[in-house]
Amino acid sequence: MSNPSTSSDKLQPHDPDQGARPSGTHQIVVVGGGIAGLEIASKLPGSTRNASIAVTLVDREPAYVWKPMLHTIAAGTTDVSQQETSYISQARNRHFVFETGELKGIDRKERKLHLKPLEIEGRSILPERAISYDTLILATGSEANDFGTPGVRDHCLTIDSRSQAMKFNREVMAHMLEALAAKSSLHIAVVGGGATGVELAAELVQLADTSAYYGAAGLRDQVKVTLIESGPNLLGAFPNRVAIAARERIEKLGVTVLTGARVVAAEAGCLRLADGTQIDAGLKVWAAGVKASDACASFDGLEVTRNNQIVVRPTLQTTRDPGIFAVGDCSSLSVGDPGRPLPPAAQVAHQQASHLIRHLPGWLEGKDMPSFSYRDFGSIVSLGGYGAYGSLGQFGLFTGGFLRGRVAQLGHVLLYRSHQSRLHGFWRGGLIWLADMINSHVRARIRLPDR
Image (cartoon, rainbow, N blue to C red; front, top):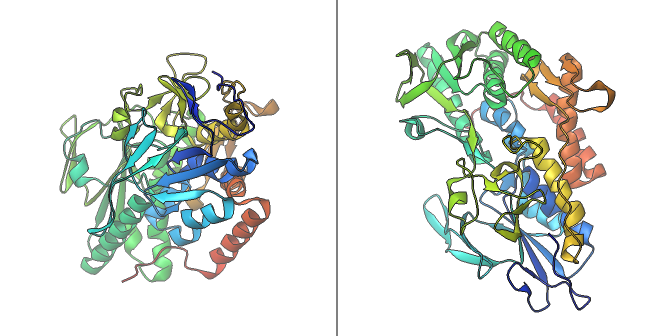
């Protein structure tokens, strides 16, 4: 769909019902500072080269962490302070405006976002407020799907955001200290055998192994990790060869793997399976399935799936409002086969962000918005210091190739570093990489308790 033509040199705000409104600064608001949202906010102002365009990013967190790294923050094998990007600092460096807040609702007629009141530790910081927009980009990401399982919200932790990962890290450190003091076992149950669950299980083993270096010699034998997957295999979205290799490796590390095991209830000290089995666990994390935020279902009549994902056209515009785009995990786009939407993966979010960065400026000037084209470059699962496995996907002459060992680990590192380069620029991204390499030699290899 094309944007209405303008009659002046200045951009006209796009109105899906009336064509154009009076001239002025075109307000682009991006909601969600994840992989897609932060890339768009960081690069779009430079790509437009037009002073009549203003970009605002809205997120409830104060800083950004690459989502595929959240499990390392949760386990404490990576220090969040070394890997996070402050939104305020990024906004200053990349010429956009940052607004702290959580989306409450959208008024499409008035073209306004309503943000919830901001509270920090019970103190009211900001009242409920509204932000006007001309073009809206929703990139609110995803969260764990508990499928309505009783007790999950009360007794299980999730690691879908920076704050949740930090909370889990505090909990796992406290439980490990208690186990050391009491010389007792700590049972940790991870529900979900996708990439997040498998990688978290490996990182928890690495946390226990590394703790011995700092004097907790018996902790490795005290920590018991159980990985529970309802499907027949781990890593169901990965090629079978990758899934088998990853399972063999984590089982050798001492992780108990249960497949075909569906959790039907979570309780204070255990999980209950459909066959009646009870899995004792003092610490439980839910990483089974994803869905978009429940708030997406109430976004002023936008079409959503049963998992709350916003349905978009091939142009990434929402089906009921061409002035609103949705990208990343919160969106649902079927390419080729209508029954198979694109997966909620980092590479999808990045490619959709790149598509908007490249074509949105032209659309605002009246050109047609081209359809998004996805290319599968494969996927990699990293087991921390114990190895990595992956496939190449559609990568030149090596389509479907199997990766393992150092090559796969290097591929995982390069994915992260290329993402940093897109956010910060080549030289600044390179300096961040150098700083991380230095820190890996001079700082603790795990995040030690603060108190």
